[in-house]
Structures are given as structure tokens and as C-alpha cells.
Amino acid sequence: MAPVIGHIKARATESLDGETTELYKEEHASINVVATAGLSANYRMSERLDIFVDGMFLYRSLHSRGAILNHKPVSVGIGLNYRLE
Image (cartoon, rainbow, N blue to C red; front, side):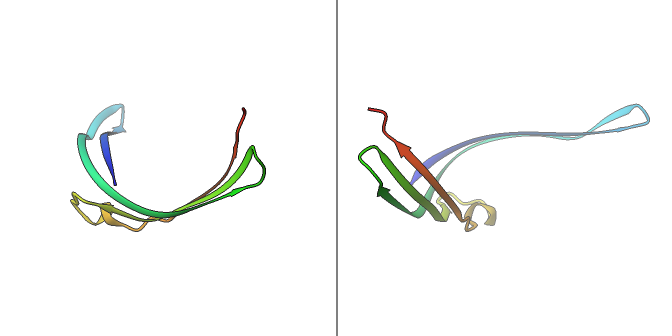
């Protein structure tokens, strides 16, 4: 579980024949708590080098305000960690 703090500013304008019209201007801030679930695997290749694979398979808003906050994103990351010392 993790707190998520968000702040969004959005503005749209339209220009026609040299005249600019503001279509909308929105600003929204919120604090939310989300729960995520995933899987991580690490493999030590040497004393200084690790390879890892991470995946997030569930994202659930605990303060939901709509379906978009409870969609099921899938993200996968692959990387190397190298210890300098």
C-alpha cells in the first residue's frame, strides 16, 4: 500500500481567425491510497552484478472515485544492478 499525491492542471484553447477562445481550464489536487500487487525476481550473476525482473499485475484504489482508478495495468521491468564498492 502506498499514498499517492496528485496535482493536475489542464487547459485548452482554440484559435480561429486571430481570436483565441479558452475551451477549459481545470486544476485538481488529491491524496489517495492505493494497493498494488506484483512479482519480483532477482538473480545474482556475480558478487557485484544482479539482474532483476519486476511485474505489477494489480492496482486498486482504496479511495475509489471511478473505474479508471481500479483498472488492471500490467507493467514489466527488466534491469541490472551493479554494486560499485
